[in-house]
Image 1: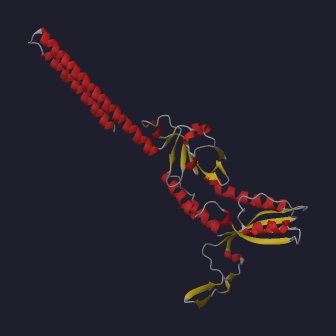
Image 2 (image 1 turned 90 degrees about the vertical axis):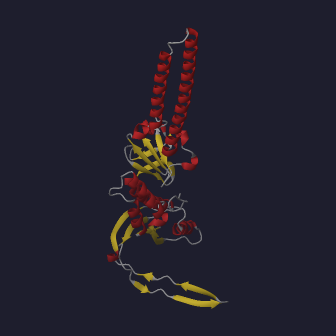
Length: 327
């Protein structure tokens, strides 16, 4: 594109020089003929210059369209449409794109692949309706699972979600009038072999020539050596009280938690004590596919370092939350 513009400028210069030569060469004719020749030369010069300007404007327009199509500049918060709400935000101090033709006044840029990513300049953060934890600085953030306008620094994201889950279980115990509750995290070893108590087996039956397989799930007995870590997330003693319906976010689709609430709220035969082993990843918002895309984005930004969303997700898949509650 730049070479086209330079070529047009060079062509204009040559045309001007040649037409000046034509004017100077018209000396051995009558004054009237000379005047007509010069007028013709000037008209020709003007037509060529106007044509070159039109071509230059066309090339300029093509450059603007090319830069905007390939960089997706954002000029105001209204440019962020509802169907492409960002799932990740990268805050940057500056970059070369702000000097591109057609992008000079951009306050940020969007990327659709591998995720909906918004890149914004640190001095333009206030022009968007987003909040950031712990603060808005040169870093990369992922959207809060339950607040699309709040973004958490990816370095703190998984720890923040873990804390939020503990707080929700704490609130459930408080709302249901518990006298005691505890949350314990148990992370299985990545390469351990489960000890079988009852092996799985298949029963086969033929019904109208259709083969039906029934598989009984094997039961396993865990020992301390089967876990790479055991951590108490929270424990609390309370005075107890009448149960009230708790608000749920992370556990709103967890069958065990829903069952616990229903039994505690029942007036017929309310429970007094329960213990659950909740699979941590069931209440997580980032699965393996999303984690792979996050790591791909980090790699593109050369920000991968020691941070890997996929490794965090794999650890979550090996984590059990033991939730004990007494009334």
